[in-house]
Length: 249
Image (cartoon, rainbow, N blue to C red; front, side):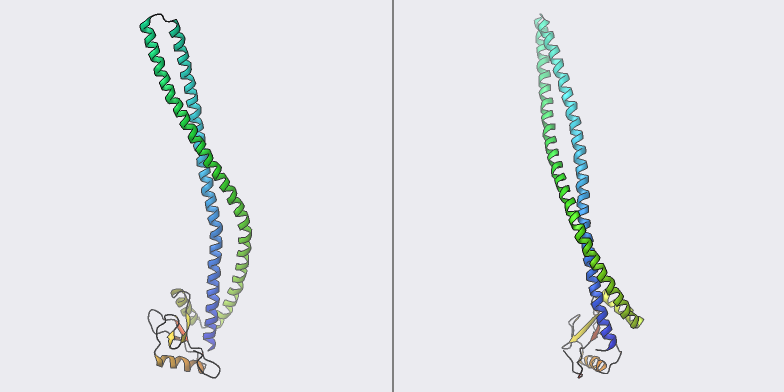
Protein backbone atom coordinates (compact mmCIF):
# COMPACT_ATOMS: atom_id res chain seq x y z
CA UNK A 1 0.00 0.00 0.00
CA UNK A 2 1.44 3.39 -1.01
CA UNK A 3 2.23 5.98 1.65
CA UNK A 4 -0.63 8.30 0.68
CA UNK A 5 -3.21 5.50 0.69
CA UNK A 6 -1.84 4.19 4.01
CA UNK A 7 -2.11 7.70 5.45
CA UNK A 8 -5.67 8.05 4.15
CA UNK A 9 -6.65 4.69 5.67
CA UNK A 10 -5.13 5.77 9.00
CA UNK A 11 -6.89 9.13 8.71
CA UNK A 12 -10.20 7.39 8.04
CA UNK A 13 -9.77 5.10 11.06
CA UNK A 14 -9.11 8.17 13.21
CA UNK A 15 -12.08 10.04 11.78
CA UNK A 16 -14.37 7.08 12.34
CA UNK A 17 -13.16 6.78 15.93
CA UNK A 18 -13.64 10.50 16.45
CA UNK A 19 -17.11 10.34 14.96
CA UNK A 20 -18.01 7.46 17.29
CA UNK A 21 -16.63 9.34 20.29
CA UNK A 22 -18.52 12.49 19.32
CA UNK A 23 -21.71 10.44 19.06
CA UNK A 24 -21.02 8.84 22.44
CA UNK A 25 -20.41 12.29 23.94
CA UNK A 26 -23.63 13.58 22.43
CA UNK A 27 -25.52 10.54 23.76
CA UNK A 28 -24.07 11.05 27.25
CA UNK A 29 -24.94 14.74 27.28
CA UNK A 30 -28.40 13.84 26.01
CA UNK A 31 -28.76 11.22 28.73
CA UNK A 32 -28.25 13.84 31.44
CA UNK A 33 -30.28 16.43 29.55
CA UNK A 34 -33.17 13.98 29.31
CA UNK A 35 -33.25 13.49 33.08
CA UNK A 36 -32.99 17.26 33.64
CA UNK A 37 -35.77 17.85 31.13
CA UNK A 38 -38.03 15.35 32.88
CA UNK A 39 -37.21 16.98 36.21
CA UNK A 40 -38.14 20.42 34.86
CA UNK A 41 -41.38 19.01 33.45
CA UNK A 42 -42.21 17.35 36.77
CA UNK A 43 -41.38 20.52 38.69
CA UNK A 44 -43.66 22.52 36.43
CA UNK A 45 -46.38 19.89 36.86
CA UNK A 46 -45.90 20.01 40.65
CA UNK A 47 -46.29 23.80 40.60
CA UNK A 48 -49.46 23.48 38.52
CA UNK A 49 -50.84 20.82 40.90
CA UNK A 50 -50.00 23.01 43.89
CA UNK A 51 -51.75 25.94 42.25
CA UNK A 52 -54.78 23.75 41.59
CA UNK A 53 -54.77 22.58 45.23
CA UNK A 54 -54.64 26.20 46.41
CA UNK A 55 -57.60 27.06 44.18
CA UNK A 56 -59.60 24.08 45.44
CA UNK A 57 -58.80 24.89 49.06
CA UNK A 58 -59.94 28.45 48.48
CA UNK A 59 -63.10 27.14 46.82
CA UNK A 60 -63.69 24.78 49.76
CA UNK A 61 -63.29 27.59 52.31
CA UNK A 62 -65.66 29.78 50.32
CA UNK A 63 -68.25 26.99 50.00
CA UNK A 64 -67.93 26.07 53.69
CA UNK A 65 -68.55 29.71 54.56
CA UNK A 66 -71.55 29.83 52.24
CA UNK A 67 -72.98 26.65 53.83
CA UNK A 68 -72.58 28.04 57.36
CA UNK A 69 -74.26 31.27 56.31
CA UNK A 70 -77.19 29.39 54.77
CA UNK A 71 -77.50 27.19 57.88
CA UNK A 72 -77.70 30.34 60.03
CA UNK A 73 -80.47 31.62 57.78
CA UNK A 74 -82.39 28.34 58.24
CA UNK A 75 -82.05 28.68 62.03
CA UNK A 76 -83.44 32.20 61.82
CA UNK A 77 -86.35 30.96 59.70
CA UNK A 78 -87.10 28.23 62.24
CA UNK A 79 -87.10 30.76 65.07
CA UNK A 80 -89.59 32.86 63.12
CA UNK A 81 -91.64 29.76 62.35
CA UNK A 82 -92.01 29.03 66.08
CA UNK A 83 -93.31 32.53 66.66
CA UNK A 84 -95.76 32.70 63.77
CA UNK A 85 -99.38 31.80 64.50
CA UNK A 86 -100.78 32.45 61.05
CA UNK A 87 -101.13 29.10 59.29
CA UNK A 88 -100.62 30.56 55.85
CA UNK A 89 -97.43 32.28 56.94
CA UNK A 90 -96.26 29.08 58.66
CA UNK A 91 -96.69 27.11 55.44
CA UNK A 92 -94.79 29.75 53.49
CA UNK A 93 -91.90 29.68 55.98
CA UNK A 94 -91.81 25.88 56.00
CA UNK A 95 -91.62 25.94 52.20
CA UNK A 96 -88.75 28.42 52.33
CA UNK A 97 -86.93 26.26 54.87
CA UNK A 98 -87.35 23.15 52.70
CA UNK A 99 -86.03 24.98 49.62
CA UNK A 100 -83.06 26.31 51.62
CA UNK A 101 -82.29 22.79 52.89
CA UNK A 102 -82.36 21.48 49.32
CA UNK A 103 -79.99 24.28 48.28
CA UNK A 104 -77.71 23.41 51.21
CA UNK A 105 -77.75 19.78 50.11
CA UNK A 106 -76.38 20.88 46.74
CA UNK A 107 -73.72 22.97 48.50
CA UNK A 108 -72.73 19.92 50.58
CA UNK A 109 -72.45 17.84 47.41
CA UNK A 110 -70.27 20.56 45.94
CA UNK A 111 -68.08 20.48 49.07
CA UNK A 112 -67.74 16.68 48.81
CA UNK A 113 -66.80 16.99 45.13
CA UNK A 114 -64.14 19.58 45.97
CA UNK A 115 -62.80 17.36 48.77
CA UNK A 116 -62.53 14.42 46.37
CA UNK A 117 -60.69 16.58 43.85
CA UNK A 118 -58.38 17.82 46.60
CA UNK A 119 -57.56 14.29 47.67
CA UNK A 120 -56.83 13.30 44.07
CA UNK A 121 -54.68 16.37 43.44
CA UNK A 122 -52.74 15.86 46.67
CA UNK A 123 -52.08 12.22 45.73
CA UNK A 124 -50.86 13.31 42.28
CA UNK A 125 -48.63 15.91 43.90
CA UNK A 126 -47.23 13.32 46.33
CA UNK A 127 -46.46 11.00 43.37
CA UNK A 128 -44.73 13.83 41.50
CA UNK A 129 -42.67 14.77 44.54
CA UNK A 130 -41.62 11.12 44.95
CA UNK A 131 -40.56 11.05 41.28
CA UNK A 132 -38.68 14.34 41.72
CA UNK A 133 -36.73 12.84 44.61
CA UNK A 134 -35.90 9.83 42.41
CA UNK A 135 -34.77 12.14 39.59
CA UNK A 136 -32.60 14.16 41.99
CA UNK A 137 -30.94 10.96 43.15
CA UNK A 138 -30.56 9.73 39.56
CA UNK A 139 -29.03 13.04 38.46
CA UNK A 140 -26.59 13.00 41.35
CA UNK A 141 -25.44 9.46 40.48
CA UNK A 142 -25.38 9.90 36.72
CA UNK A 143 -23.69 13.28 36.84
CA UNK A 144 -20.60 11.76 38.47
CA UNK A 145 -20.45 8.74 36.14
CA UNK A 146 -21.31 10.64 32.99
CA UNK A 147 -18.91 13.49 33.66
CA UNK A 148 -16.14 10.96 34.34
CA UNK A 149 -16.99 9.13 31.10
CA UNK A 150 -17.19 12.40 29.17
CA UNK A 151 -13.78 13.50 30.52
CA UNK A 152 -12.24 10.19 29.41
CA UNK A 153 -13.77 10.36 25.94
CA UNK A 154 -12.75 13.98 25.46
CA UNK A 155 -9.19 13.13 26.46
CA UNK A 156 -9.11 10.27 23.94
CA UNK A 157 -10.66 12.51 21.29
CA UNK A 158 -8.03 15.18 21.88
CA UNK A 159 -5.27 12.61 21.38
CA UNK A 160 -6.95 11.41 18.16
CA UNK A 161 -7.26 15.00 16.92
CA UNK A 162 -3.57 15.65 17.52
CA UNK A 163 -2.68 12.46 15.61
CA UNK A 164 -5.07 13.51 12.85
CA UNK A 165 -3.34 16.88 12.52
CA UNK A 166 0.01 15.13 12.07
CA UNK A 167 -1.38 12.93 9.27
CA UNK A 168 -3.15 15.82 7.54
CA UNK A 169 0.04 17.90 7.65
CA UNK A 170 1.78 15.23 5.48
CA UNK A 171 -1.08 14.95 2.96
CA UNK A 172 -1.65 16.99 -0.17
CA UNK A 173 -4.24 19.67 0.70
CA UNK A 174 -6.42 18.98 -2.35
CA UNK A 175 -6.37 15.22 -1.70
CA UNK A 176 -7.27 15.81 1.94
CA UNK A 177 -10.18 18.07 0.91
CA UNK A 178 -11.35 15.44 -1.58
CA UNK A 179 -11.16 12.72 1.08
CA UNK A 180 -13.13 14.84 3.59
CA UNK A 181 -15.83 15.57 1.03
CA UNK A 182 -16.26 11.87 0.22
CA UNK A 183 -16.11 10.94 3.92
CA UNK A 184 -18.93 13.38 4.66
CA UNK A 185 -21.05 12.32 1.68
CA UNK A 186 -20.55 8.55 1.87
CA UNK A 187 -21.40 7.60 5.42
CA UNK A 188 -17.95 8.03 6.96
CA UNK A 189 -16.40 5.63 4.45
CA UNK A 190 -14.16 7.38 1.93
CA UNK A 191 -11.29 4.91 1.42
CA UNK A 192 -12.13 1.28 0.63
CA UNK A 193 -10.38 -1.83 -0.53
CA UNK A 194 -11.09 -3.53 -3.83
CA UNK A 195 -11.45 -7.19 -2.98
CA UNK A 196 -11.98 -9.90 -5.60
CA UNK A 197 -12.60 -7.15 -8.11
CA UNK A 198 -15.38 -5.60 -6.05
CA UNK A 199 -15.46 -2.17 -4.40
CA UNK A 200 -16.09 -2.70 -0.68
CA UNK A 201 -17.92 0.60 -0.48
CA UNK A 202 -20.72 0.08 -3.01
CA UNK A 203 -20.12 -3.64 -3.71
CA UNK A 204 -20.11 -3.08 -7.46
CA UNK A 205 -17.59 -4.70 -9.79
CA UNK A 206 -14.53 -2.70 -10.78
CA UNK A 207 -13.46 -3.15 -14.44
CA UNK A 208 -10.52 -5.60 -14.67
CA UNK A 209 -8.27 -3.12 -16.48
CA UNK A 210 -8.77 -0.63 -13.64
CA UNK A 211 -7.98 -3.28 -11.04
CA UNK A 212 -4.75 -3.97 -12.94
CA UNK A 213 -3.93 -0.25 -12.96
CA UNK A 214 -4.53 0.08 -9.21
CA UNK A 215 -2.45 -3.00 -8.41
CA UNK A 216 0.37 -1.99 -10.74
CA UNK A 217 0.42 1.54 -9.36
CA UNK A 218 0.68 0.32 -5.80
CA UNK A 219 3.38 -2.25 -6.59
CA UNK A 220 5.40 0.54 -8.17
CA UNK A 221 4.81 2.80 -5.18
CA UNK A 222 3.06 5.43 -7.31
CA UNK A 223 1.19 8.25 -5.60
CA UNK A 224 -1.67 8.04 -8.10
CA UNK A 225 -5.11 7.95 -6.48
CA UNK A 226 -7.97 5.92 -7.95
CA UNK A 227 -11.69 6.32 -7.40
CA UNK A 228 -14.51 3.83 -7.76
CA UNK A 229 -15.91 4.50 -11.26
CA UNK A 230 -19.53 4.15 -10.20
CA UNK A 231 -20.97 7.70 -9.95
CA UNK A 232 -23.04 7.09 -6.81
CA UNK A 233 -19.88 5.80 -5.06
CA UNK A 234 -16.71 7.61 -6.16
CA UNK A 235 -14.80 6.44 -3.10
CA UNK A 236 -11.01 6.27 -3.04
CA UNK A 237 -10.06 2.66 -3.76
CA UNK A 238 -6.94 0.56 -3.27
CA UNK A 239 -5.87 -3.08 -3.48
CA UNK A 240 -4.01 -4.69 -0.62
CA UNK A 241 -0.67 -5.72 -2.07
CA UNK A 242 1.80 -7.93 -0.18
CA UNK A 243 5.53 -7.39 -0.13
CA UNK A 244 6.06 -9.88 -3.00
CA UNK A 245 3.71 -7.85 -5.20
CA UNK A 246 0.86 -10.32 -4.96
CA UNK A 247 -2.62 -9.02 -4.21
CA UNK A 248 -3.81 -9.92 -0.71
CA UNK A 249 -7.42 -10.17 -1.93
